Length: 248
Image (cartoon, rainbow, N blue to C red; front, side, top):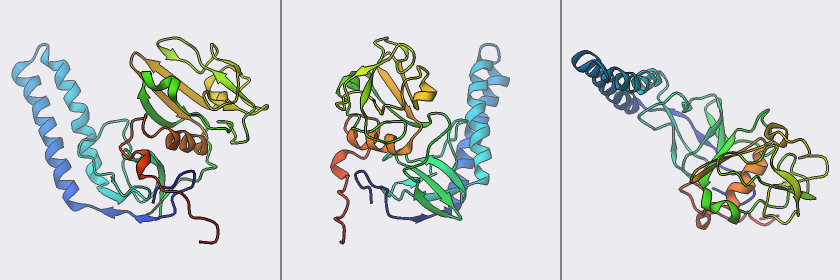
C-alpha cells in the first residue's frame, strides 16, 4: 500500500519466473540475429547499427541467469519483468538494493527474497534517487518544508540557475530564496557549498526535460509524492493513501 509520507508497510516475495527465461531468450536471440545479419549481409555503414543492436542482445541474454520478479510493495506492479535489458537497468534478484519501481517511483530492497521499500533515512554518497519531469513543470514543483540534505526543517532555499541546459543546482544556484516550499529547502547547516554532491541534489536540465537526483531517500519520497501529477510515474496522487491514525 502506497502511503503519503510514510514507508510502505507491505512486503512481497521474490520468485523465479521460468517463462521470463524463454521470453528473454527469444528477444535476445532476435537482437543478436538482426545484428549479425546487418554486419555480415549488409556491411559498411550497417556495422554501426549492428553494434548498437548487439548491446541489448548481450545484456538481455545475460539477464536470463537472473529471471526473478516480485510485486512492488507499494503499488503491486511487477518488478524485474522487462524483456529487453540494457546496461544501465538493474536486474531483480533475491538480494538487491535501491531497485526503482518504474510505475510508482519508490525504491525497494530485496533481502533474503523479501522485498520492502528502502528506509527513509537512507543517504547515498552521491545523489542517485532519481525522477524526471518536463521542464515546463519546474516552476510549479512543490519541495516541502524540510532540508533536502538532512530532513530537518528548512530555514532557507536554493534559487536554481536559469540556464536552459546543464546542472541548475550547482555553483550558479544561490541560497537566497525563502523557505516557502517553491525551491529546494536547506537548514542552516547545509546547502552552503556550491557543488551538487554536497548539496545532496542534482537537477540536470536539457531542452524540454529535467532530471532530479537526491541523496536522502526521505527528501526524494517527499518530492515524489508532492509532485506525482507532474513527474514521470504512472501512479498518480489520486492513488495515494493517507497513513492510518495512531492507534488504528
